[in-house]
Length: 206
Image (cartoon, rainbow, N blue to C red; front, side, top):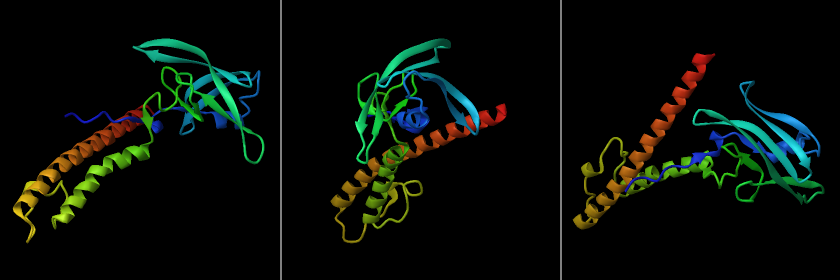
């Protein structure tokens, strides 16, 4: 069975935070501005935002689809909820599903993380670590203090007093866990290699 495709992380996408827009006064009805995303002080992307009313903003930007530039122009609803200490706070209503969210993430259309199937990088890290942690737990139960990268499961010696049938069952279980841990290690390495490549390409353009 193939391993499920890992979700992208929210940190990999440009986010539009309604709270930041509110603090900057962008949600004032009738106001138009150009919102910018920066990296190391340089502008890397922009979007036009117009507050058509208290309950709606319009987004205008361009995306590249199959090598062609495509103009986007559509409204995003906003709702307001009272704060405990007075005042109100705004929320986006996702243009795709209508969920009330603080952030929308850039894709062809700005949408919530559920619609774009995004999770947080910390969640990905915990998922990647789970098979490795499980492998260590099973290995310690077998009296082994070496990891799956240094000692394959089939070379672990049977602990004294453990029945052979029990030992063989545990080894088969460990082999399956080690296989998942190895897949995660390879995925992590591939991700690091991609990040290094992207960083190298960025430096070469400086």
